[in-house]
Length: 328
Image (tube, rainbow, N blue to C red; front, side, top):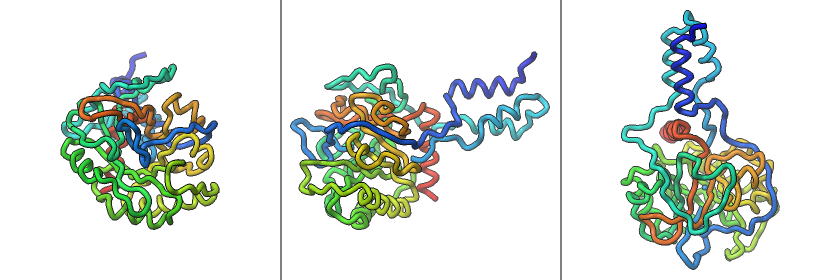
């Protein structure tokens, strides 16, 4: 039987772009404490770093488009327009840089490795010092998360410099806040809002939640209090920026507090010894922090390495959705 030309076109588009109508965000579960920390608060011996929305789905139902094109007499102009909409277009001069980062402590992740993900990025704080963002972009920093604040009175001294430098380098970037369990959530949200610009095209803000035994705040509130504080912070930040915050967390904190919580929030998961599916079974994610010991041109010492959960087409689609919400 002769295949309709438009159906062939659709199949080609889907295969080339890796398009999927599957939503990519949020499920839940976990394992035993990892003992991992980030350098959000702690300064390591060698420079290391700090720490990590919404569905990556497409704007129409792919199956309905296929059905519309199944018969030649249904392949009208509207169906053809829908085919064009399935493949997101990158912005002008948009390009994904292949990762050239090395790892001082390489890990065998098994069947699914970070290298199989198309879009890599970094997160940084003051401990990286001066960064050549143009060189880092060429190394594969296709996005960057920059530490902005922690608690209710601390601003990372490199935040404004990194924020402006990534803008000049053309790197999509967002800011993250390290949560302090001895301070009211509303004060911390206001402090973040005071210091992080509201800019169209910025990545969603990130709430970094973890236990840090070296912090001068030794409190480990009960789960109910943790979730309440997080909700207060995220609601206030979402109202201001028009984007739902991403939750960054390591395995031990997730196990203690986040299993079964926030099913409608996107997650950025730290998992430096195994694939997230093994450490956080059932939990979908937007970003995976797979290393705290990355090496590359443009930065002295070590840097956190991350990947986006999706192919290039999904990345451009996700970025366009974020830009639209931030501007709205």
